[in-house]
Image 1 (cartoon, rainbow, N blue to C red):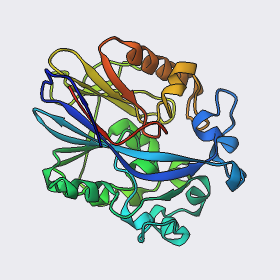
Image 2 (spheres, rainbow, N blue to C red):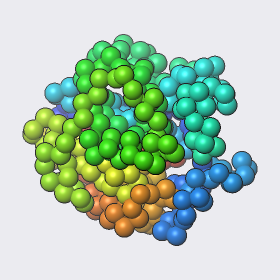
Image 3 (spheres, helix red, strand yellow):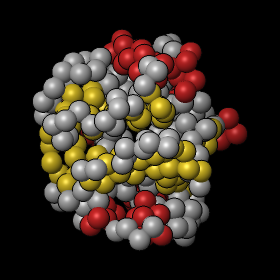
Image 4 (cartoon, rainbow, N blue to C red):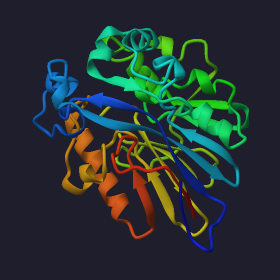
Amino acid sequence: MDNIGTDNAKGFSVQVMQAGKVCVSPSLPFGGDDASLLRGSGIFTPKAKRLWLPVCSFLVTTPKGRIIVDTGWDRSMSPHGVIDRKAQIRSLDSWLLYKVNQGVVAAGMTVPEQLGRQGLSPEDIDYVVVTHLDCDHTNGLRGLAAAKHIMVAAQEMQYATAFPNNLVRFRKKWWEGLDIDLYTWNDTNGPAHHSYDLFGDGSVQFINIPGHTDGQIAVKVTNSDGKFVLLFGDGGYSSKSWEEMITSGISTDKSAQKHSLQWIRDQSLNPDCIKSMACHDPDNKPQVIAF
């Protein structure tokens, strides 16, 4: 694992963990403004033309606590560390979502398994936050249920549980029975002027970046010198997304999605930005960024 940092790190770090892979149509991450929902879903995309992308989770360490951003795949997706069609359909509670994205997580690579190798358990995590409620971000929630807090934007939960989203794209089974803190916006940062300041000091902000879903967030982690790391979930699928302004093929509001992507671009080009990362960037490597 690479270690990247400055000599005057302020007690903040972001660890990149690859918690599985997902196989999707190229139109899902990089479909652009003209991609239809059908093309983005990849229902009819041949296997040979699909892409394998990483499914990343991030361990954020701050002076005020440990935070997991996105949860990767749960062991139930691939009990033996290989692709298992029946297991995935059971885990996701959806044949349709299996057709959209095939997932696998190798032995030892779920988030709890990786934490365990570092001497950590879910009980040691202060906050688990999902950038949005799509399956590849929430499937690992049950393995982290013992964390002190599980955070979901109330706007995102409302979106995910509304008809027809609750029948097609989301399943309440993924979080049902878990003790979830539904938070409402308490600040006005970001492209939609909706954000949540976790500690009240600007060090960890959940910033609404709508478009892919209504309540999707980016997590902005800022040290005492104003240097920051931006984790933007599926606001884009790689650095190429914001560099070339390529929107993804699945969106709830294409105009909002493009506005959010422009904000991600502006933040990424800010001289104080140490690193900005999507969940599924093929260039993401296991590393620890200390700052």
